[in-house]
Image (cartoon, rainbow, N blue to C red):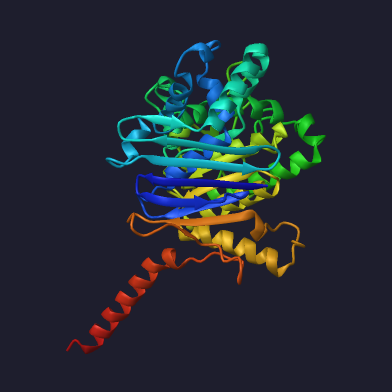
Length: 418
């Protein structure tokens, strides 16, 4: 399987060619285009479901429906026209190629005036899908669901608004990935209750959980990482027949024999807990779907988190990657990159025979790219596949090196001060 995304003249990106793998890291400074790259991979990998959500039966008989649909999808990625990211006087180009079970070579061109041009191959694919949905409305409904989860940076909004201002989460001005993210979290609450019977408030273990050994292992590992990262865990308490709701559980005593769970509303949690619990909630429930094709797009998993908590989040990411899920992760945290590096070195050191309880990543499953603010400095593939099989992290280490050099100069100056 070969996958390639080529972006030209869009925002700060003059030209970028990436080959996503099971785990793809997009590293870079602010305003270097990291989110744009993640959103465009999300756009192409989930194109059929995105199209199904904006499509209306019979729309294929309307002139210009192809470009109108693609414009709605692209503008929905950010909640505003993607043409704002086009440079004056030149067209941006986005090309996606995939070779595997199917062969894909799609291209979208757009400019700052809002003009969109589609390749014939993309138009043909859209016509094929429209014909299928016209004859099979059930398939149309199923494909609207999709197999992609975009976890945005402003995910703490769900904690603040879910109980009191849900309409804000689903407002038309919100980007489509955010609205879908909020919807998936609501569904995950129902799934959690079905699987775990309101654990930890239920005294009896889930029959479903006990009968599924792999699911139990998944839950134990993810829950353990969550507790280490957040000093608690997200749960859905057993509150009868009402709609399920997420809450946060913390242990009230360090002694396990006497400890009990205290449930807090999400609004009462710390900023790091607000940012991170949604990922753990999805991880705990998504595995039960048995959907090995599900893709995650995780913007800045380090947001508001202590470095050790960042490690635990990435432990779960790697665990799911090894369970055949795909991830695109945007980050400017050195800790995120260091964790991935260590996991690849663990795979190399143990020659793939990983000790029980540890997590490793096969370097062949990892891709990593560094983007820059300055459009004259080209993006760079930072995977060293020829020698170390690890990441080249000089850019992330640069700031620390500069601070260390400055500190040494200050120490030297202090020695000469009378």
